Structure formats: structure tokens, C-alpha cells
Amino acid sequence: MLVEAGPAFVPSRDYPQTAPDWERHLFPERQGSQGRHSFAPLQRLDEHLRQQLGSWSAGKGRLNPGTHRHAWRYHHVRGVGGSTLHFTGEAHRLHPRAFRLESEFGLGADWPFGYELLEPWYVKAESVIGVAGVGESTRPRSASYPQPAHPPGFAAQMLAKASSQDWHPNALAVLSRPHQGRPPCNYCSACNRGCPRTDKGSTDVTFIRQAQATGRLTIMSESEVLALVPGGDDRVKELIVAEPGGVQQRVRARIYAVACGAVETPRLLLLSTNDQARDGLANESGQVGKNFLETLSWKSTGLSPEPLGSHRGLPADLISWDFNAPDAIPGVVGGCRFTHSTAEGGFNGPIAHATRAIAGWGRQHRRQLNEEFGNLLSIGAIGEWLPHDLSYIDLDPESRDRHDRPIARIHSHLDDMALARLRFMAKKSRDILAEVGVTDLREEYGSYDFFSATHVFGTARMGTDPQMSVVNPDGRSHRWTNLYVADASVFPSSGGGESPSLTIAALALRMANHIARRLARRD
Image 1 (tube, one colour):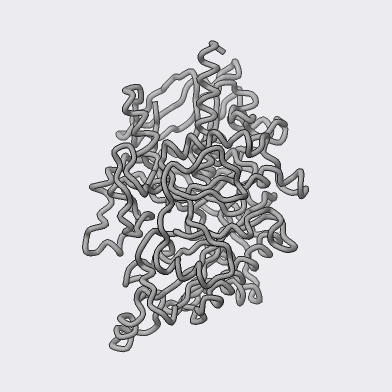
Image 2 (image 1 turned 90 degrees about the horizontal axis):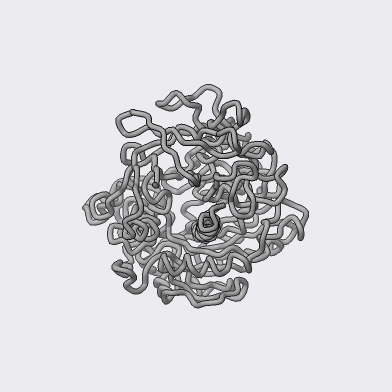
């Protein structure tokens, strides 16, 4: 049984990319598809750093005129398929050295196993999803990608030729060939708005569709789990579910796997209290909600002097791993990656160009748009986030949801290491653009003055020490023998900018295999 708080989306109906006003609509927000959360006060901005790292655009000026970092949003989807419904489709393996941060550098935490243990599960996940890519030396592979890599678009080709960075076609959960009844991509560049053709490998059209085909999956959508009920024998007894009409029911199972994301998973565990778990379910260590790791990001966009047609093609079609290793950035622990991100940043239509990249209005504005559209080039960067005491998730003491339960509260703070890494990401992005002749910058946006997180991790960390982690290496609670966590909450580290979805899938497949073996031996 899959209990899902949000609705089931129908790709051909809910993602109207063929509508004349497609550009005005981001991923659809259907009733119940957005959870509520709050933010603790974010840090004050330093004016000197703002000059280097402040977000701005030619069309709108300074994007955060306030004195403190702005809590824009946590980009999370509640729905059958979760946040993969609106993800770009990047399907990355973690760098092998990302598993050993504490051992090598004395910071963060090690994973309880290495890359080699997860590698066969990466292969399985890539096969189910249909990942397209090419191998690269830092991540050893026992099998080739199941799909040929996508050809980079014209703008990406120009970037690869002119830049001194080592660029590769990005590994994408987007079909380049037909796969299991799904068509290949048509390169509309709107992956983040939802894929109406199902060529993007979101969870609803891959794992869930295959599970439904067995006839052994029941989906309860628009049904919110209010709490898991701890029992007296170190087992979860049942869960309490609010159905669409508000009627509550209790559901019992042998095994419970929580996969609500690194903000909502700790919230649910902290809400699941009784005499058996006074501080929250699986929170014997006090680590539930701690070690919150978020998206450290930067993007620079400029106008190319040559026509590029950069609004076309796949978002993030080209990637550079040159600075991805934990020690690749001089003087900083934790790496980053760079992508060609013009379409991913929303510059795949004329409205974005007109409102964000050009100042003014009237005839001159219109003439400039006609001359410039399609010539923007963006470099995006995502970097490591190391755990520290000022970034965590707890329960808001004041705000409550419609079921009268505290909502999750996000605490986020950029420490000195994150700021040093962000400065490197911003400078390198500008340098790459200048190297290819793009010096007329039109927009820059980053994590210094905005909280805008797509990738979040770490709030139910896995490990071998029950005092310093929430779940064991199999994803099972150290105490509660039938409780598992199956999302990026279990990540001990975020990696150097890798998208987490493929690692989540690989961990879940490994966990499923472990559960199946337990059930087979009646454990």
C-alpha cells in the first residue's frame, strides 16, 4: 500500500505544454500538492558579500532588497511520484569519495558503506528508469548506461568548444530511445513543468507504473498520514491516515517505509509520539531533524554576441565534474558541479527574457527582445552542503496545519565554508561565460540571499552508531524493527552537487531487497 498525501497527476491532462500561454505556468499546483512549512529567521546579509553574491536581473534590479536572506521556497511536490514529477531529470551517481568525508577530511559524516556496495543498485535503478548518458572516469561502472546520451544542443556545443572545462553530456532520466512503452524525448525544454509525453523518468511512470502492473499495489492518494503509532514491542503498531473527506482510519502493516522528503519525514517522526516514544519515533539519539543539508546554488546568465537558439533542447544537457571531488576547490572541503542551465533557469520562452533580461518597456524594449531572444547563455552550479548545528528541521511552535498539527520549521544558515564554496561557484560561472565571449551579464541568482532548495538531505541520517544516527545501513530504525526511511533524509552527506534522485532509487532498491530477504526467512 502506498499512502500519498497529494493527488495523482495525469501527464496528458495536467501538463499543458502545448497551450499558447504555456510559459506563464510552472509545475501545476493542484489541491493538496503543496505542503505547508515555515522558516525560522534567516541570517543578516553583509553588504560587502552582497556585492559579490547578491541576486539581481537587468529587468528587475536587486531581487532581494531586504536586509536578511529571503525564504523563497522549498521546491517540493506532494503527489504520486513526488518531486520527480517536476525535476529536471538529472540522474547522477555520487562521487566515490563523497562517501568518506569524515575519514578523509574530518568534517561531516561518513556513509556506513562505500560506492562499490551501491554500484549494482545504481545499475538496476538506471535500467528501470531508462537513464541516458556516457561513462566518466570518476565513477566506475559495471555496465553501460541503458540509453545513449542525448546530443547537446547548439548552445551547449558552442560552450564545450570554447570553454577550457571538461564537459560531458549530462546523465538524464530522459529517454533518447523508446523504453517500456514510453516515447523518446522531443526536446521541448520544459521538463520542470511536468512531462506530458512520459519520456522523463519520474517515479510515477517508472517504478510505480511497474508496481501497479503486478496487480499487488494499492495507492491511497490525497490521504495524509497524521502519525505512526509506536507499539510496546519496539515495533510500529499502525498508522493514522486522514482520507480526502477528512475521515480518519488506522492502517496496520508488517513493514513501514517513510519517504516524505528531508523536511516532512522528520516532521512525521517528531509528531509520532506516545509513552513508548516521548521525543518522537526513531529519535532515541535526538538526531531526527538534525544535519539538514540543502541546495547550495548559483547561476550566472549573460547575452552571447552570437545567435545560439539557447531556448531549445534539454535543460542541463551538458555538465562539468571538474570540481566535484571533495578537495577539488582550493582551500575548501566539498565540491561542486557546473551545467549549461539556460532552459533549466527558465529562459526557454520570450516572457522570461522580456521581464528578466531586458530593462524598460515600449518600442526599444520590443526591438531588443526581437534581436536578443535565444541568445542568452546560463552557467549553473550546485555545491556541497556540510552539516552544522544552525541548519535543522523542527516543529513550529505556533503554526499548525488543517489537522491541527504543528508544521515543519526550516532553520538554514550558510556557514563560512559554504560561503567560500559559493564565492568559488560564482566566480567560476562568470569566468566560464567570459571565456566563451559572454561578458554582458543579465541575471545572477544564488543561495546567499535566497533560500531556494530543490535538493534536501540528512535529517534522518544513516550510520552504524545509534547515538549519532537515526537508521542503520539498511535504512531501518536502530530501535523500531519494522520502520524504514527511504528518501534523502538518510544521506550522511550531500555530495558535490549531484542530483540525489538516482541515489534515492538505488538505496530504495537495496532496502527492498533487504526487506524481501527478512520476510522470506520470517524475521
